[in-house]
Amino acid sequence: MKSLKNKLLVSMPNMSDPYFAKSVIYVFEDDQSGTLGLIINKPISQMKIVNIDEKDKLFDSLLSASKNIYFGGPVMLNEACIIRIDDEEKVDFSKKIHLSNDLKSIKNMLIDNNFPENEKLVFGHSSWGKNQLNDEIKRGDWLIVNYDDSFFNSDPDSMWANLIKIYGLDEFGFTGISGVS
Image 1 (cartoon, rainbow, N blue to C red):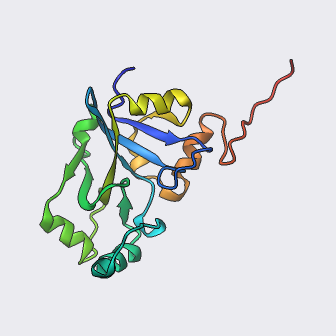
Image 2 (cartoon, rainbow, N blue to C red; image 1 turned 30 degrees about the vertical axis):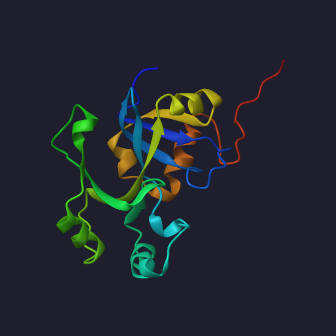
Image 3 (cartoon, rainbow, N blue to C red; image 1 turned 135 degrees about the vertical axis):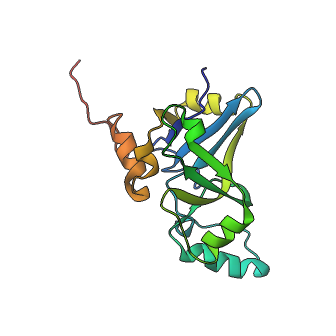
């Protein structure tokens, strides 16, 4: 299978995994060792994160208070990165998207609630081992969509539903096409 880098993975309506159900994932790395991506349509305030202990209550309240902080996936939730869209770059989407873990910028967004227009703060990421994602795609768990800037700026609440409609699906998994045999 060709590289999925700079593609969107859109979960199928029957996806039962609570982290990946109704997810749109931007794939920023795909090579022989595996695939890495970020869920781009789930504010972390909408997610139920397990294993938050007492010392993390302040952190948990900061996260749940903001609709500008995103859940990137269930891996490494203790790490944050900033996704920035560079409007100057017009050709290669991998060059348009910049990932950063600059602590000063993260603090500025998280503590001071200062979110620049073309940036998203994301905690965690999604990852698959070698051939794991290909097996899931063959099984019918994911649709693959070409990335486009409009997805980055779309309303996160309707992004997944709008993308599956491209394939004639709805959130209940029914197709909108019928036929006679």
